[in-house]
Length: 132
Image: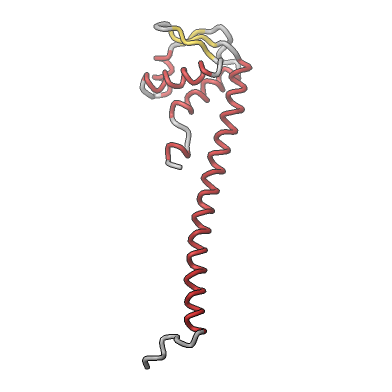
């Protein structure tokens, strides 16, 4: 898993922040808002803000209107998005932990193999003393 896969992208984080605002009632169903303002407020490019909006549109949270920003469609869908996003972030964190454990186990397995080979070498009597 690369860094970009292990942590949320900026547009996912922005989509989550916006869904949280909608869930909390800071933006009401039917309310319009500007993608440009979202970009400025989030300190990202307009493309990053647009990607966040597209993600929320795909989930039925907002509707994008070409040239006029977006409209909040569903508070319930925003809440669903937040639940899924939270699960996804937890799964990413768990995956990273598991990867670290697998790598740690690989190193331990290598160390056990080296120690076992060294022990066998010592026990077979050759132990490096045959040339002394």
